[in-house]
Image (tube, rainbow, N blue to C red):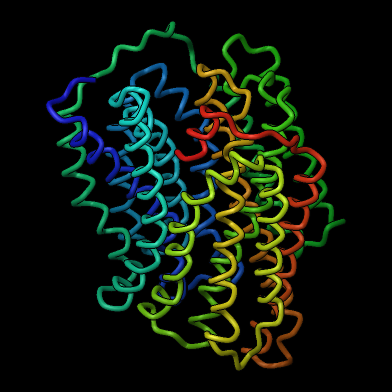
Length: 472
């Protein structure tokens, strides 16, 4: 990778990553406006967020592998160009079906962009202090992107309309694509060119998609309904087919040997339910603040501001303590705090107050998450040889996105079904009853993650290499 300024290369790919992270959260504040404009019902509204997270997570392993085989620059340009195009199409959507399909395609594009962008950073900066500095900024950008999504989403929705949340990507994407095409050079990979595991990609993506769909519909259909059982069995069969394909493939998408590492298995199993509760919580709190507290979109965005600020301040400062005491204590204490924080939302009233009913969660939750995510990344990469670090990182990111999509589908479905059952109590009270039930489900997810940490994670102090991975 040659360029006059490595930091200018970093700036280009960091903006691309910022766009990816931004679009995970920017729609949350715009959801009520999208619902009114396109006629979404309460049950299907969650797919505006889920469709993006699902395809993003489902294609991350394939995107990372394609980047290794066909060139990071090529995959970044392809992903960025398609991401820009689908952002335009989302903004032009005339109905809910078109918007959800375009969001899914946008998520697939993000899965091409994200692994390629990070790979370019790793190639551009030599291992050591300079790379650590670059990856430290990379983490800050990821945190800032989530915060900016909530704030920018509120401003754009209130003053320029919900469509501008997606149109804003278009000029940035065009300029970025041109600059990357002109200024970045291909990196000559030293690895042997191998074929992509397309059967594995098809099996795992279709299996996970169907599984998330069934999990979201089961509370409505009934858990013992023929459709729930039939589609559930089909989803499990597809995922079993994926495992079988990986065991016989000469170039598997996800080599199964990586799960021989107990901490990697435990960290991924923990990541999924934690993000399941987190994605669902953000989705439903955004709706509560706007639909029940009657906040304008801008104020809704501002109401989340303490969250990323606290997370950004605490996370980097915990690293020395994790190195000293090991990561297992933090993977017990952190999720416990997250579960306690989410428990506060189970009692949300119909005549709620932001300071009393919402703010305690927004302050306490990032404290727990700061003690969770960084140690979890250490556990997910501990004992992994350098040539498989990308696979381990991609795996935990996939667990994060899939867990988020699954949790969002389940929590929103629980909320919708409980709301429908309590409609005789009045619209607002019925809504709040649904939210409360969904938050209780989210607490259960995080409690399961805590138990998994107790059982599966082996205590180990972070080595210098693992500590570096965690900080990145």
